[in-house]
Length: 168
Image 1 (cartoon, rainbow, N blue to C red):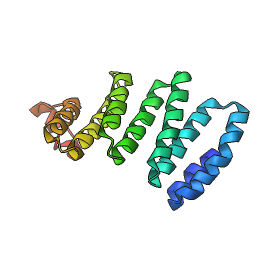
Image 2: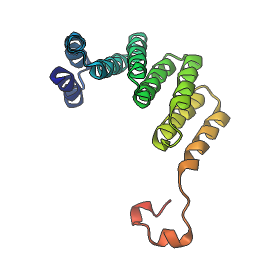
Image 3: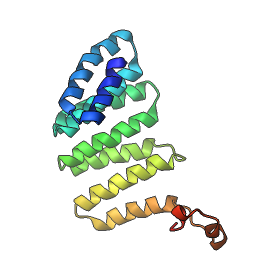
């Protein structure tokens, strides 16, 4: 786990995804040997992030897919959804709109209905996907779904909001 944590910290300090990937490749067999399957799944996802950042989206998808399946086997559906979103982003970067939509749709189906953060995050990425696919009407539909999560305040409630939320 120390190597996994160090790889994560190194990237955010230096932005060196090659160095991070090297640390993760060293950590992965040790995590497997130790039987820490949640960390193995996390390591797969972090490796996917590295490959995505390096523009190697086919490799990124392979690692995201491994992470998704392992998290689902471990019963951690929510974390698998976050990985699905990253996988869909890689498909989108490859201009594979169909595969990206399928991954986003699966993420939507697996997201708990009460998890509005994850739902909204998925909807934002879907809006972006359809915008890039030159389908602005569908992109707007997804942004309106995000807006639906925003509570509307009565005039009385607005008087009591801090200034940072006064636009709400």
